[in-house]
Amino acid sequence: MSAADPGHPGAAGDLVVTHIGLCVTDLDRSRRFYEGALGFAYDRSLQPPDGVCSTLLGVDLPVGLTAVYLTHGHLTLELLHYDRAGSPPWHARSMAEPGLTHLSFTTADLDAALARVSSFGGEVVADSNVGAAVMVRDPDGQLLELVVARPG
Image (tube, rainbow, N blue to C red):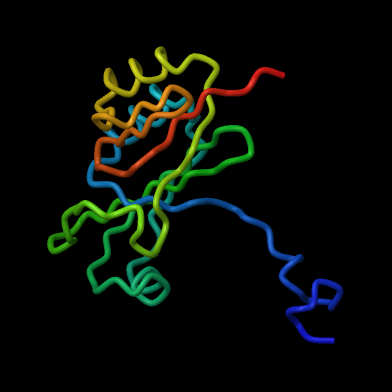
């Protein structure tokens, strides 16, 4: 039996997803967006030591990390802000580029959700509305998918 076998003690089944990390350029602006537009609630903040962050995250010193944890149901979103010079700017990525592409949320009222996105500094992606789903961007450009919840 190998470690990849789900029946093997210590297999991946013992892992639990704890949070999703999202790098942002302005913590206050991102908090307003995620709390106001998408209904997240503030949980906690932390400012871990630079040395630990540099080693764990592979970020050159000084790191200057502040992490803000927001919750929505069972999902925890960690907003990561680096208060330092030299962090790369946001750039557009193709949905076909390897890596995390987007986060997806369901809503009972798509029109109201789109209005909140716009009023809290996000952007509705032009020509992406297919009726049952629309792509939007948060204030830093992160793609988010809003999907109409199925009744039931």
